[in-house]
Amino acid sequence: GLPRDAIANIFVSLDYRSTIRLREVCKHTKEVVDGFNRNTVISLLRLECEEVDQTKIAIALNFDHLIVYRTWTHWINTAMNFSRAALPECRGTYVGALEITIDFEEIGKFLEIFKYLFGIIECDHLKLDYIPQQILQWCLDLLGSKKMSLICINIGRYKTYFEIYFDLIKGTKTENVEGTLDLTTQESINWLLQLANTTKLFDIRVNGQLLAGFKATSIVRELLHTNCD
Amino acid sequence: PNVKLVTSDNEEFVVDFRIAKMSVTVSRLMEAMNMSETDDASLLSNSIPLPNVTKAVMARVIEWCEKHKNDEPKEEKENDKRGRTTHVVSDWDKEFLKNDEFGRLCQLMGAANYLEIKGLFNDISQTIANMIHGKKSDEIAEMFNIHCDLTEAEKKEIRKKTAWCED
Image 1 (tube, rainbow over the protein chains, first blue to last red):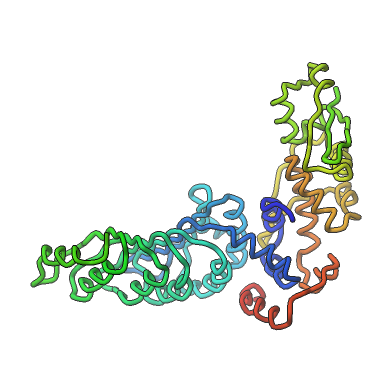
Image 2: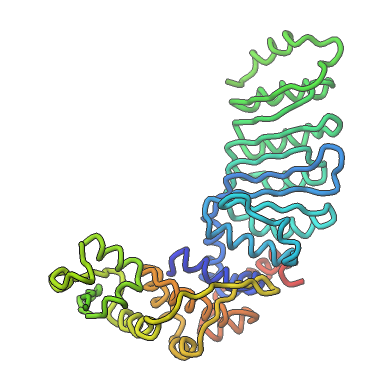
């Protein structure tokens, strides 16, 4: 077979549709396309929304290999029909990093593309900042059984979908969790304790005023009795 | 001055120093072996082993290098509307590669990759991409004489997963 760089060089010279069609030619060509992606590691997938204005979503993917970054950038750009004028929104800030900002209406199409690509690759770290429920549910469907070494979450003050976050962490068997959290509701305190029982290590920075009637020391005491290291 | 290149099947090729230098791999090996253009003795007493290239493929590589030894460095690649990164393959190169069946193109590409001859590597990539571009899966199979061993159910499942690309 051809070396990975040679395959990547053909893919970069080929439109995404023809590349994807190669998967239908025979088992071997399917394996060439899928194998190329399967060896891909995304060291970080970051999804980020503004805490208040959630009309746009920023997506960043850090790739382990420049050639794979080039190929994926090419596929995503063309599949999303990003024109050359729109390319500044889809750029690499450093080697191997692809950043895209898309409108919320476009997310459906992006996710369809991503579902295929992401279904066969590895992802190491996931970072979610102020993600609305709909996207969070998608993350759960997509990443549900993918093992991650770290999940970093910043949960907004008003939109707290604790159950989905918890299912995501549990499903990905992630033992390390980082993030920020407001302990302003009973629900958020319960979630913190539930998380401490599920993960080995976590680093949660607490924001805001503590819920009235609760003492920080009593929460810490409860945390010390959890399974967390 | 000439340089001796020895292939995996022990065939010796004597090529011009300029042609040898077109390969980044060979250049590095010559440097490591203290072979220089001005030192005939170093060139005569050494040969460059190329264990990943066969005699037949080496002959094709040298033919390509002979044609391109006086080329100016090329300005590379431009994205077209559909996002393809296109490398312009010259008429001579099209003619040079047109009779190679897919297996031979892959061997030649493997050698260009190993020898790090960027121009040849890009020519072959673009030629293969051009052969595949815009074709349906059965047309690709026919062109490369590939027997499709996927069942209809498997094909249906593949299409379902990548329906987004057929908009």
